Length: 144
Image 1 (cartoon, rainbow, N blue to C red):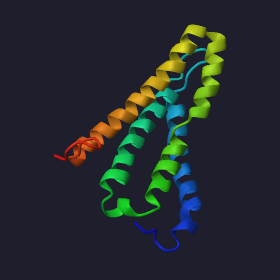
Image 2: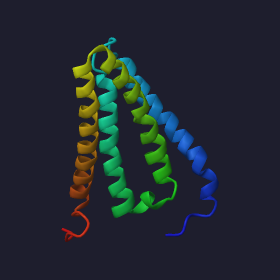
Image 3: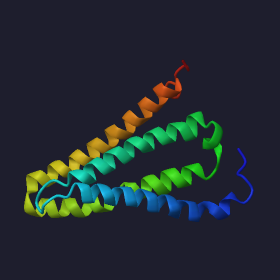
Image 4: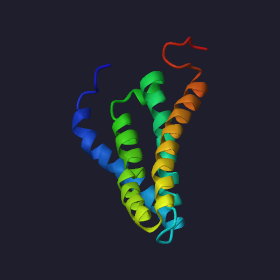
């Protein structure tokens, strides 16, 4: 597919707008679900896992289904890099893991590996759900 004329000049502003929206959603969740020092930061875990689920869904629709408005070359930068990139926060996860490891090592290790497992499982689930909704099977399999 050929990119729309002039769409390249809009990539950075579109990513910035999406990032503001995604970061705003993450910030609202952190405010609604604060965690005391030394406790598991559930809001960050839920944010990252739900963001990964949505990334799995998005990639199926953008890469495999690619219909209608999803064909526009600014969809992936806006939603994937911008909104979901701003929403998920693996840098905060890293800082929180470091602090939790110092305060409660076992809880820190559980958070470290639990978040990674939840994020990976969420991507797989997002891809599976999106493919099921789109009536597709995994690549290499027959379409339904």
